[in-house]
Image (tube, rainbow, N blue to C red; front, side, top):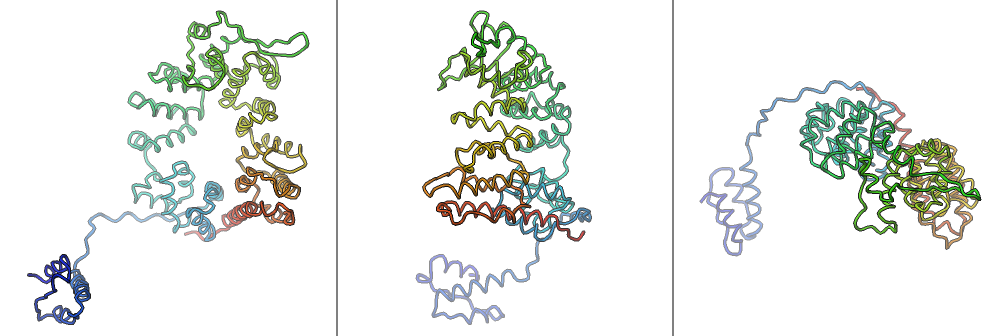
Length: 516
C-alpha cells in the first residue's frame, strides 16, 4: 500500500482502531517520517500528514493562464482625490455616515476629482448593490476605474456599453436606469428605444418603463401614450392617463377640461361664502364618462373611505384635470378654490383630486395653497410632503416664516417641523442658523418630562442639510445646563458628529493631489 493511502486509511478508522504503519523508505522523505513519535499515535498521524502533503505539492508547476493580458490602463487626466477623502470614502463604504455618500460623490464630481485607486473595488461593489448611485459612481471613477470595471462582470455597469445592447440584454434594473438616463438627455431617443421591444414586454415592465416617461414629458410622447390608453393592462392604461393629464395640450387633457366645464362651478352664496358645486347631466358618473370616451380607475373593492362610487369617480376626474385649469376657468386663486371646495358637498373628492393633480403637475402656487390649507389640521400633516416639489427658495422661505411664527423653539408640533423634513437639499446659512437656534431655544425652555421624540430623531437628518461650513459657529452655545439636556445630548452629539464629518469631507475634497 502506498504511504499516502496508508495514512488515509488510518485517519478514516481512527488511531485507536488502527496503528499507523508506514513502509520504510531510503530517501529523504523516509528519513523525515522515521522521526515521528510512534508513542503519540494522533501526533504522529498529523505530523506524517503534514510532511506528506508538503511533499506531494512540492515541485508542482503552477497553472498557466492562456488568456492574453489586458491592455494597460491609459494615464488618468483627472486629479486624484486626497488621502483624507479616501479615508472618508472607506468609512462610508464600511457603513459609517453612509447616508452622506451621494453628497460625497456629487462633491467629487463637481471638483473634478477621481476616486483614489485603493477605493475603486469597494466602490464598484457598492454600485453593484445600489443601482441608484451608479451614475454618480461612474462620474468619479476616472480611467483606472473604467479599466478596472471591464475586468469584472459585476462591474460592467460602469463601462461604456452600447445602449441598444444594454436595452436588449441587460437586467431589469440596468434597463430602467438606462431609460431614465436617456429620457433625461433625449426623450425622443428613449421613446424609440422602448418601442423596439414594447410588444414583448411583460405588463410589470411596461408599467415601469412608462412611468419613466414622466422625465422630460413632452408633446412628442402623445401618440405613444394614446396607444397606451388601449393597452390590455389596466395599470398601463392608468399610467398612460396620468401622463397625458400632465400634457395640458393633449387631446385627452383637452377633452377632460371640456368635460368638467359645464358640470363643476364656483358659486357664492347670499352671505358671500363660496363653494364648488357639481351638477352631472344624468347624475350617473359612469354614463357621463362613457359618453365622452373617458376611462378612469374603478373604486377599490375593499375601501375604508366613507364616500361612495359617485364621489370616487369625481375624485378620479378631478385628479386628471391640470390643476392650473381651475384658476383659468373661474379666475380665482388656488387658496380661494381650495376653501370653496372644502365647503362643497363633494369636498373630499375635490381635495383628494387636487392633491393627486398637484403631485403630478407640481405647480408651486397650488402647493403653497394646499400647505396653507392643511397646516392647521393635524390629520392632514402628511400632505405637507407636497412641499418637497417646491423650488428650494420657496420652501426655504416657508420654513423661515414658520420658524419665526413660534418663539418656543422647534418641536414635534411646530409648524416648521414637517417643512424641514421635506427640505431635502442643502440649506442656506440663514436657514441653518435659524434651525439650530430654534433647537437650542427648545432645549433651554422645555422641561425634563417633554419627549419631543420626533424632533430628537430628526436631528441627524437635519445634519445632512445644515451648511457644514458653519460647524464651528453652530457647535457652541448649546444649553448644556438645561434640565432637559440629558435627554437631548445623545441626539445633539450625533448631529454634531455628522456635521463635522461633512465639514471635513468637503475640506478633504477641495485638497488637491498629484496627477498620475
